[in-house]
Amino acid sequence: MCSSAKDLLVSWYSWSVPTAIYPLRIHLLETELMNIIRQINEIMLVIL
Image (cartoon, rainbow, N blue to C red):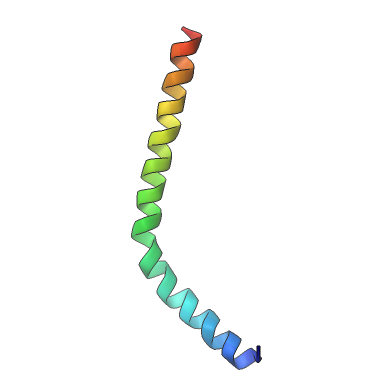
């Protein structure tokens, strides 16, 4: 792969992917937090 094509790909990737993934990443963070909270609650139930 020649460097100019790679540079083009990297610049396109760094420009387009964050705008596409940012809302998805926030959504994933929310679901991840919910999973963590659920696990903590289950651990607390086991401990208590």
